[in-house]
Amino acid sequence: MTETARRPWTPRRTVVAFGLVSLFADMVYEGMRSVAGPFLGTLGASALTVGLVTGAGEAVALVLRLVTGPWADHSGRHWRLTVVGYAMTAVCVPLLAVAPALGAAGVAVAAALILLERAGKAVRSPAKSALLARMAASTGRGRGFAVHKAMDQVGAFAGPLLLAGVAAATGVLWAGLALLAVPGAICLLLLLQLRRRVPAVADPDPDDAAERPAPDLAGEGRDGLVRRMVGADLPRELHLFSLAAALATAGLMTFGVMSYRFVEDGLVALAAVPLVYAAAMAVEAVAALATGDLFDRHGGRVLLVVPLVVAAVPPLVFGPTLLAVLAGVVLWGLATGVLDSTVKAYVAELVPSRRRATAYGVFAAVQGLGALAGGALAGALATDHPLLLTGCVAVLQVLSFGLLARLTLSARRGRPAA
Image (cartoon, rainbow, N blue to C red):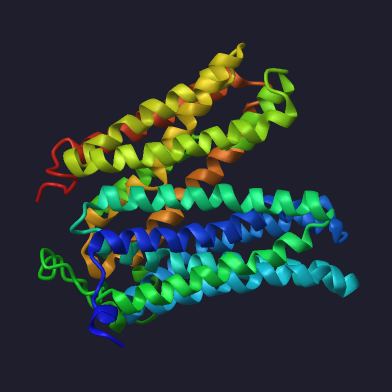
């Protein structure tokens, strides 16, 4: 191997390469998720089974991070967990193509593969975010997470489009799932190349190596392990920020709830719903890029806009005109982009680098619980009580804004004052 081939990549090139890894991985698992329900149905699964499998998958992807985050920090094997997690996705999704040939066992095999893929997401996510936070330290963490999110969204577009095209051409879903082995292989090849070209990035940052030493909880037995998993030794600011993000997320309805309402009201044709969703995803990518850059310039104060945007979504998407609905969807995409990218840059500012994977696991779990609570709230009120839902969302956003203001207004470049 030549000296040029061994030369480490620049931080900017590294961030872009990691974005490409996520782009191809998103093609695989977002492609699968776009057809998971109908595919299970073709195997003979009932609506209840589909709901249980997909719901359990999201729960696994959420709860397991409380284990994999501390595991990554304790073992220092951030790269290994990242590779294993991506490999689980790259292998499990194409294997779904064999389920139709298994007869009565097809549903059970498909369900197991879907759950394993979601477990792979939980295995890699905290470690991956910790690696990206260090990679983007010199380029600006806001920009780094924003670029990663934007490229991630490209894959989220391409995967479902690929599945739709193959299904239209062949009349079956399994052929498209099998074809996802190609982007899965590209994802793993890029990841292995990235690992060879990037120096160790899981070491403590120079500016926090001596700060906030993590207490030795290992000697406390099972109680110490549990405390480490839930982040009991993490800074108080991280938990307050997790709560603020969870409150904001709880007020952000899912696209499924919104689309159900505006289709039922006759404002958008059913066939046009994917186009509206695609527009929201485009806004999400642009919002991530814009707020990431603003975060690097102005710090965590940028996040104060999120509760204001979230509070404006319900009165617009429940409005009487198409223009109001589309404006609400645009704001929904903007808030979603920030809550899935720029917030991760702020998490990296709140904790020492050696505890970031744990912090990302805790943050994702708390934010996910907010999403579950918000989904239940929206599902209960959106159809018959939209005004009450709008009021509940407004209250949640007032609480979120208060917590964010407390954390960020006295901060310098996103890091709480000592």
